[in-house]
Image (tube, rainbow, N blue to C red; front, side):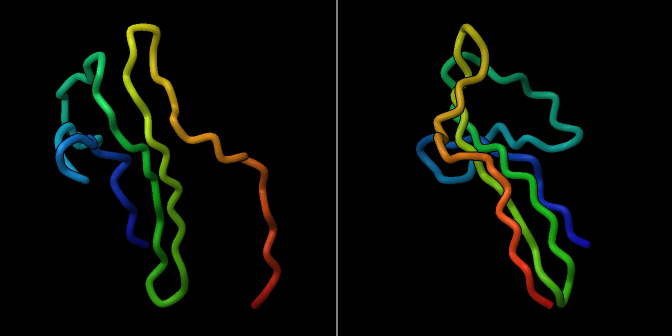
Amino acid sequence: AFLHRTGHGIGLEEHEEPYIVAGNARPLAVGHAFSIEPGIYLEGRYGARIEDIVICTAAGPESLDRTPRSLIVVSGT
């Protein structure tokens, strides 16, 4: 299995600091935009990743994603 990083900053570049990964102690600051994108990939089978865009505000994190979080079950082999 391959695990994807938790997230990264979004600004002038699509992927930039702060990278949200184990070992990165850089704090988030008000105004930072970042993704939260956990994922897992099983070699030769399939993978899944969910990505949300979040803004760090003085009141706390604000998700810009308004997509419903209901579970969709897909049957197959």
